[in-house]
Length: 408
Image 1 (cartoon, rainbow, N blue to C red):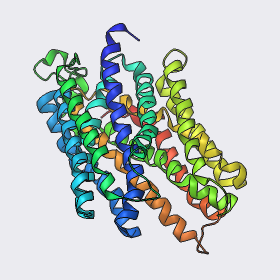
Image 2 (cartoon, rainbow, N blue to C red; image 1 turned 90 degrees about the horizontal axis):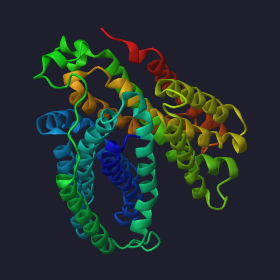
Image 3 (cartoon, rainbow, N blue to C red; image 1 turned 135 degrees about the vertical axis):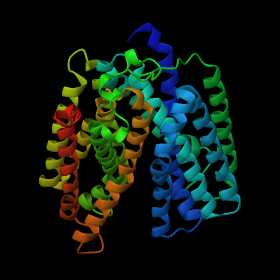
Image 4 (tube, rainbow, N blue to C red; image 1 turned 120 degrees about the vertical axis):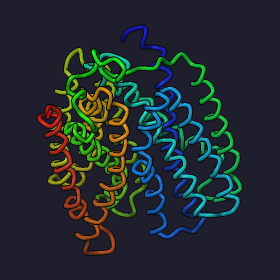
């Protein structure tokens, strides 16, 4: 890693930590408020909808914001918007208001959308194109580490066994203060503004010849395929973590002790994959070949989950976590390659693909209900529903093999 990249990547690493911390807090807070506000199952689905709908609603406007004020100022504003979302949790708790809680999640989601649309292309552009996946893997380590620390932090203030909404105020005031201070730090930090090749429209001689003849980002077929690839990727990344506890209960019985212990296995698999990405890309393997290799691993691991006895197949979900690790970082540089002046807009389209994290698990749940015969789903019924992995990985493999090369 070049010495000139160390400071910017350290700063952006902190931002990826913030993104993961927010995910971890949401994961911990949802069951807490579900009990405290006596939410129905249908209402609990609205929690997921509020989080992910922000990526769809604000995905395209985020690109316009970044194009207008640049990556650095967009990061500053995204942190301030996330701070507003966090502080809104306090009145939602004091009022015991589920609509205000959903508003807080949506506002925080808008900030997260702008932050994602800023930091992901920044990491891709700030260094050599061929090592973008390695830098993204490093960011992934920071992101997933914060997933665990978010619940640990809230656990210092909130007790799931004794739900008290009055306990919510202090931790969220603290997080709000941290986000505001971080936005001030980013404003003064030595974070250089970066531009993709040909992104400077004022310099026609440097413009990318592929993008220069286009009038709309929709004329970039490899970008559109990349959005779909990220949609499927975020779905298959989220699904193992969302379903492994239920699958473990079906395999080992409802009376098994500590089924929640299985939740840590998928992130552990991802951590190992991130370490592979940091150490091997591009020195040993190119990010494109790594994407193809890891997608094949994901396919094989999915087949193991589907066809092997549950006691063995459940560990295939760990291999799926490993396979998923470098996909985000490898898809981004392939999808925004040669976008030139459309890079910021293209990044906002890619961020909209994150909604796959809500759609794919929802389809999995519908399939599980479709196959379910008894009140509790069986191992076989879970395995039938896990077939959803196969078309998702096949499309990602198509993108990593052929789709990213399409230029018209």
